[in-house]
Amino acid sequence: MYQKYKNAELVKPGGLDLKDRLVGVQRVTKVTKGGRAFGFSAIVVVGDETNVVGHGLGKSKDVATAIAKAVEDAKKNLVRIPIIKGTLPHEQKGKYGGARVNIIPAAPGTGVIAGGAVRVVLEAVGVHDVLSKSQGSSNPHNVVKATFDALLQLRDAKSVAKERGISLEKVFNG
Image 1 (tube, rainbow, N blue to C red):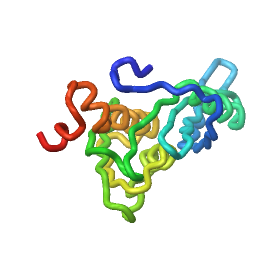
Image 2: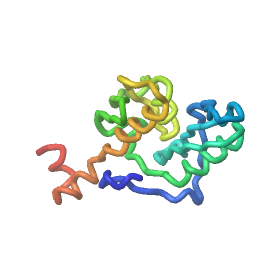
Image 3: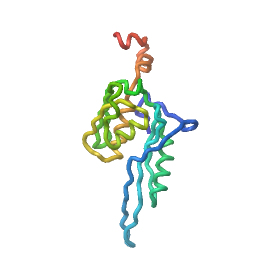
Image 4: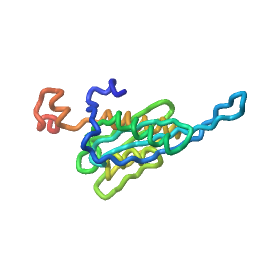
């Protein structure tokens, strides 16, 4: 799922204290010759509030089962995100479908300035100070995936230094 991100570190759910957050539940209708068949789809974000997060989609005839399936799916897609002192290492844009998300690091005490699905993802990953702007589509599925796109492109100074084969000092001082 995250093959296109070279620095995405997949995490196994064992031993983590994961909290699940419901982003949204939609009632979906399938029209058949016998009438309408109702079902539910749920999108859930799970995270340990330190730096591991994942998202999942579950579908079922009833809400509780759809949410349970979404949580199971989210636990299969956990990734580690670099967080420095409760905020992000740098500004990043993410996109998915028609949704565009811009996340910006903020000074301590700012809080999570984000709305809807972006807020849920950032709180689940454990970011405390961040500014964000969601543009384009407000479809929660695409906004969550756009936020993940932005988070997965984040790189901390250590990984940049290792990738370039230079010292950590040289990354900052040139």
